[in-house]
Amino acid sequence: MAFPSTSCSVFAQNLSVSFSARQVINNLSVEISSRNITVIVGRSGVGKSTFLRSLNRLNEEISGSRTEGTVKLSFKDGTVDIYRDRFPIEELRRRVGMVFQTPHPIPTSIGKNLSLPLKLVLNLPSRKIDDRIEKALTIVHLWSEVKNRLKEPALSLSGGQQQRLCLARTLALEPEILLLDEPTASLDFKASEKIEDLLSELKRDYTIISVSHSIGQARRIADNVLVMKEGSIIKVLAASQFQEKGTLEDLLNEVF
Amino acid sequence: MRRSLEKIIVILSYASSVMTIMIFSVFLWFLISRGYTTLNLKLLFGNVSPYGAIFKGIPVWDGVWPALVGTTFLVFISCAIAVPVGISAGIFLAEYATTSRWRSFINFAVDLLAGMPSIVMGLFGFAMIMLLRSSLLPEATTCLLLASICIALLVLPYLIRTTQAALETLPAALRLTGVSMGFTKWQNIFRVLLPYASRGILSGVILAIGRAAEDTAVILLTGVVANSGLPGSLTDKFEALPFSIYYLAAEHRTAEELNRGFGSALLLLILTAVLFQIAYWFHGRISKGSR
Image (cartoon, rainbow over all chains, first blue to last red; front, top):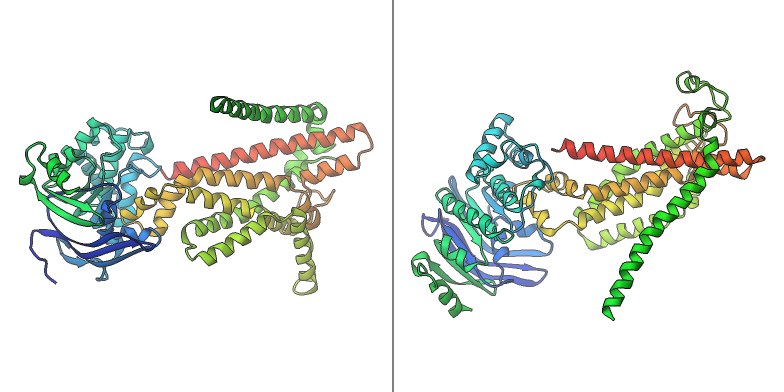
């Protein structure tokens, strides 16, 4: 089945997700364009994270989950209907990278946090692994800070560094779509700013979908804003509609 | 009112921890004051030279060296059986047993096993040997292997429960970390969840070692004897420190013999401390190895 438009990389139709009979995503349909930052906003509990997790089938790891509807993702080599095509779930999750609200480094060294997934998921030889580690850490501006301490425990890094490490770990796997579940929620102002700048750089190469609680952040980084309420997307806003300070707040106030 | 209640709780918890230390100190002082005079090479080797006993295999009849070696073997063999099985079962219960009926059935079985008095476990081992003797293996007799298996059964529930609890209390978001990168379920458990849970699992192993080293009731019925020398194989009878202590204390004729019982108790305490250190060291090695 063809995509509605070529620039679209995520296409969801009549998507519903429930956990043990509690409906969280309710008949949601949306198209998300590629190489853009799309920010999802909405109050707590409207299903923002669940929607993100429905794009890499991560809800299936949570007991009692049930997903209906269609999600199609377009990758460089074709389109996958993720709930119908027999596409390997591990490969899907590699291509749809995800970073969470709280950074969770593997309790090993900084270097191993990046090398382990590359070895386990991609089976890369060690020579290539070193290149990728350097590349990924450079992208997130962490290389200069950690290049001499790759053997030190990852948990010794600061919160902001850990979050950038987790982002690098995801990027090293060379995903095509990036899901971010409030990536700056546990960070201070300075560290958040770094991540925001980073995301604006990254959107040249990735389709980024991020959940955010901060309207200010949405205004600064988003090309599109999806407003969620009661498990559905009730409004789609383009950047041109909220460029001026305060307009996004006003628009959202109307909705809530 | 609420303030003073809070104060009382703080004082009580302080007092409890101080009391724990005090009880341990009194206990240790008691053991040392009674046992230190006997704590020498003669207690271990009797009239045999240590070199001869350790390297030439000269039998020791009036020392606790064979008991020390017997207990060490017992702990290592029973842990070699129980630790892999216990940790695997804990992983299964925490991560794989999804149907609730199956899960509650296993939980029930583990609870029963945990509540089993050790003498019953000893009786079970004894009955098993009787059964084997009258059927497949007429030669079978109580021995080091049987005692180790029964001890392994005894400590299994600790290992299962601590592993299960250590895994189940990990934050839910952590569970998604590995799989979100494309790890398989097992890779996620082995590479992400177990390293996070390893401290908790270690405490279960420590508990198991302590229990295996001190239990007397199980080995009483499954192969321990007062005087057998070093066990030559898994199917030999063996000596063990807790049993030696019991034997020395129950059958003593002089005060000096009773003090040797205290000396042996001190030795058992030192042995378990050393075994705990080995467990910590092993844990350190594993977590370093994954770096």
